[in-house]
Amino acid sequence: MTSNKRNYQKELEKLISELDGKKTLLLHCCCGPCSTYVTEYLHRFFDITIFFYNPNITEEDEYLKRKEELMRYYSEVSYGREICFIDADYEPEKFFEVSKGLENEPERGKRCLKCFELRLGATAEVAKNEGFDYFCSSLSISPYKNAEDLMMVGEKMSEKFGVPYLVSDFKKNNGYKRSIELSEEYGLYRQNFCGCIFSK
Image: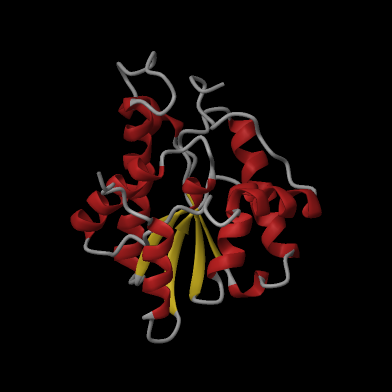
């Protein structure tokens, strides 16, 4: 019996091989560690703009710490000048609104899907309004995030806003391992929960 499961890494490699010059990419990032390998890998093929939109990080101190670490990394890394940064508003009330009634859902459940829709929807909307060629998220680098769910939501938002979602599962090809190495090299803060009070 053959599997119909998509190989997102092979799809990405094929897409990259067929690119006609560098394209623009709006990359949603949740924190410094998750973005490290993703931008190291993609910056050769895309002009990347980081989009920090994470209303799921419900504690303000945690939100600011992650944002500051993300910005510090791109001020220190060798290709930092090539990567722009869009700092979105801190809006935890929007996360609480979409997660209402789903507070007791397990991790990777319906609440997480609503959270993906909120963040990727905002990313797609900015990508459309600012004329980006693609949008994507660094979230799939985490072994705790379901790449199929992210692709499903990303492609749904792609259809809604008319901007292609960059096919991806960044944990492949030792991506997660490399993100840990880069985090250690730059002394990045690595949180032990996704961000919302329910995951904590």
